[in-house]
Length: 216
Image (cartoon, rainbow, N blue to C red; front, side, top):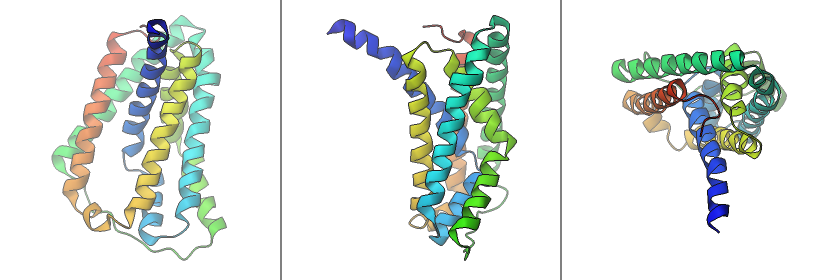
């Protein structure tokens, strides 16, 4: 029983790392999140948009972990470069989030009702997801390099944790937007969110900088 508990610890740790890292990356407001938020506030095609964004993140993260991530892991130099590059990237994200939390959002997010049919809405969602270079940087490169540092089944756990973060966030953003519209328009809410992002990102940056990928 003790051996089984011990063997589960790396899987739980990898899943938690995937959940927290993806959660911190995905919450930062960008074009994709703004679209999901607008659809939620307009109560228009929320479920398909949430599902599309979630599956896209899951696929891109898996490609990074099991494709590009595997190639990077095969080269110690590439692995080290990705470790340091990922730490720098997380540090930058954390500092930017801390700055936003300190200064507050530049402008309030305003709901815009959409009368579009489902097909044009999904096309717009696909464009903001698959044509956005930041999505590839977050999922394929950063998440892929982090996930590649885990052995065997722990990589699967990492992808599951990352996918869970995407599913939870997009569902909360889309389905909770209409209910929480009054609070979402308040700058203080986004300052609190950015403060949380900063804590998670800076913690992950320190962890990645001081411990080699794949180290226990």
